[in-house]
Length: 323
Image (cartoon, rainbow, N blue to C red; front, side):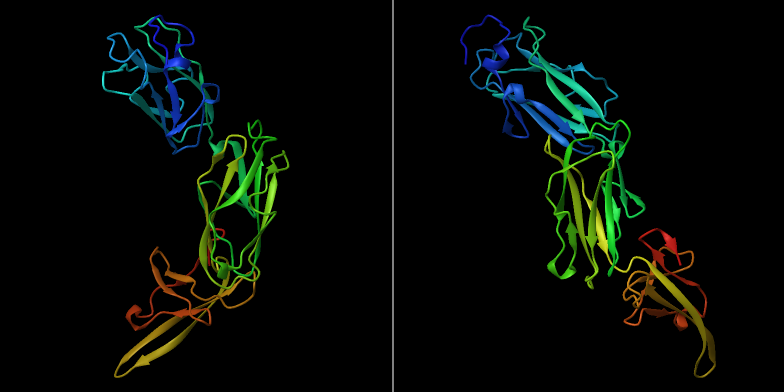
């Protein structure tokens, strides 16, 4: 590091080493790409700098371009000056990205009491994928993060399209496991996960083949923006009998010595496979609590404690319908 106390335009390059989340970054490569919910730590290391301990050596972080509505929260706050005190070797800022619209911003480090020009600019972008992308699971709108409900014995399509004027148009993206399904779920996805795909206006469609799946379970997918190495929050997939039709009937029941009641029955059949749907949650009308799950025959029924009351219903998680 330099021993020359005269402030020069290259002092930042000589006296400070930037780090992002603990990884050293060259000044020309210092860029921040954030998703809502991300927490990023930017550190300036000055361990061998001649500036340490001098009274006017107080450093702050400032917007060069951007504003307080950008969806970013800084700790310490922007423009708050921090002493490069004797015994210290670095200073850090934590940047938390909130759920705000996509926006570009530029930051700069400054030593305003020292008469030194500001640091090289720190370019940054907050990417709100919900604003940039339309994502459908078959014909159901979904999002990263979010949930989707593939069905046993079905094929599904996951389609990603850029919205009008999206900055992701004609950018490379790839779909990857965030949490891969167990081998017993038998889920196959094509095109192959991890393959870089060009996001055109027509979008990209992946096929999820669950035709041979017989076991319920969860897995999750995420999108990576290749150019910036930014990975989205997961889209959680809950594989089960998530779309069924039902049949209902009642039977008169008697229990000795003098209890008579009407038992209500429901039978669930998978829309996709046509098979009886086992372990489907069954609720009573007006309740969000799971009353029972269907048995091997896809059936469930009220019991004597119900005294015959309560229509049995099933929420199709695939599309939100109640049957």
